Image: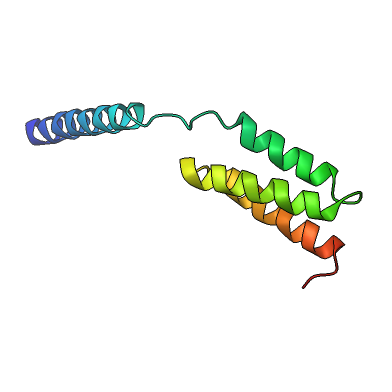
Length: 93
C-alpha cells in the first residue's frame, strides 16, 4: 500500500512540474506584431475584386509582403486567397 501511495505522489509531483514548465514556456511566446495593417489591406483588396482586379492583386501583394515579414500565417493565407480571386477576375489561370 505504501508503494502505491509513493508512486501516486511521485506521479502527481512530476505531472505538476511538467505542466508548470510547459505553461511558462508558452508565456514567453510574444504575440504577433500589429496585424491590423495586413488585415485592412486584405479587406481593401477583396472589396476591389469586381471593380479593379489589378488593384486587388496590388493590395494583396503588399499584405503578403508584410505578413511574411512578421510571419503572420493567417495574413499570408488570406493574401494568397485574395491574389487568386484577383487573378480569377482577370481570367488569369
